[in-house]
Amino acid sequence: DIQMTQSPSTLSASVGDRVTITCRASQSISTWLAWYQQKPGKAPKLLIYKASSLGSGVPARFSGSGSGTEFTLTISSLQPDDFATYYCQQRDSYPYTFGQGTKLEIK
Amino acid sequence: EVQLLESGGGLVQPGGSLRLSCAASGFTFSSYAMSWVRQAPGRGLEWVSAISGSPGSTYYADSVKGRFTISRDTSKTTLYLQMNSLKAEDTAVYYCAKDFFAFDIWGQGTMVTVSS
Image (cartoon, rainbow over the protein chains, first blue to last red):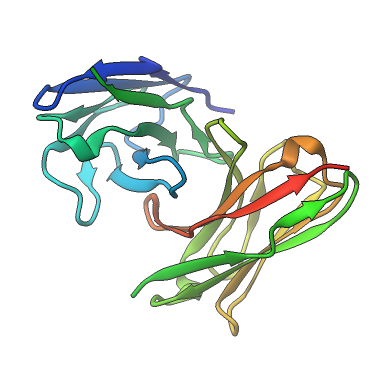
């Protein structure tokens, strides 16, 4: 199985900050990577698919990059609505696996 | 409007069974792969099972293989997850998700609690 490792596990930041979350795959997954945002008590929401394509209705301050084994999610200017937990997911092969999550907290 | 609505969760004893349903609307159900994803209390997301579009190949996480069965009824546009031999570690919110390059649409989730 492909293991996905996110860093950091927790990130403290302020409104207006630029933040980056990293996701590493245990083997190459080309660009078969997605990013999701989840708020407490809610279902996850798709942000990015195929490593860098923006999901429907997702604000342009979110961007994704990377290929192979290393990927990043960047939020260019944090907004109050962005404080949540973020997950990466590999979609190269079953079993599809998620990273452990990154909790983005208000500093 | 594209929508997924799960049902069927509840409290069940260890060793028991439960069938989850996910009613889909607003898209051509038979054309898309579908998955179940679960989240134990306070934990991260875990992919559980998937079924492709027609003819419907199935895939399972090792943690549920041999105990859970995914299926779909295209006439009812409904996805199912039959869960047998349930264990305490299966306690989680179960989400169904539509798969189009990623899980682009999610249901609201249904809680399954396995406890005596």
